[in-house]
Image (cartoon, rainbow, N blue to C red; front, side, top):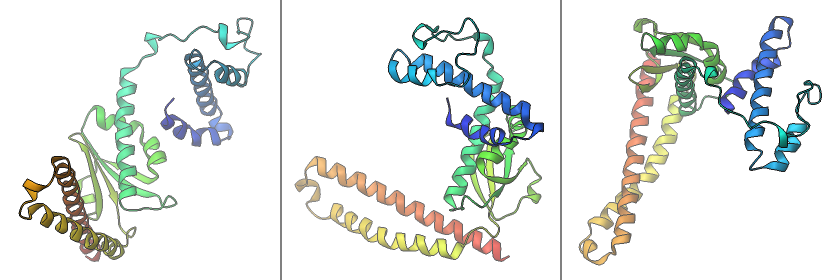
Length: 254
């Protein structure tokens, strides 16, 4: 049972209005069926825990004459081929990519959970765009979005956006207008960079020193080379992030 499903049904389950009654029942029934089958799957490996949980499922003892008295004699779950839906699975894969991109952007720019953000999604026409449109509400729920716009004219998308390119079919952008203190972020990154550069330069001098190749054991040379590679990547990432914040700060001023 994916945690994604549990997160998605929260708004449905918590909405106890009459208009939402059917949707709420469907979500709860799906969850019950999934949990019950999952317990039967786990029972051979975890007999005591699964028996206890299975006995505590809502509705136990009122499911008819064929209801087993114990999970031990309940039939083991089997795959029902007709329940498979490749189109739904593909749609959910696309939706998950979009949600991951939204969350990644919010994390990258340190957006507080209480602040909903606006996203612009560029999706390839056809199945990808159709999936995004069909599950926009799910993306809003899990991406903590105030709005999700799909395939807008580029001139209608703000210049001050954070961008994640998931693949050739899907790009997600987040409006940063008024959300990020670029000067503060640049200051923090500069501080980290000022601490990282001397460490990298010291290690570079050590590796390039006369006699290093002959005197240092191979395992230590390998460790130092790996460490230097990591430091170079960190410096490059920091410099790229600083340049990006500077660009966004200039755009916001304009």
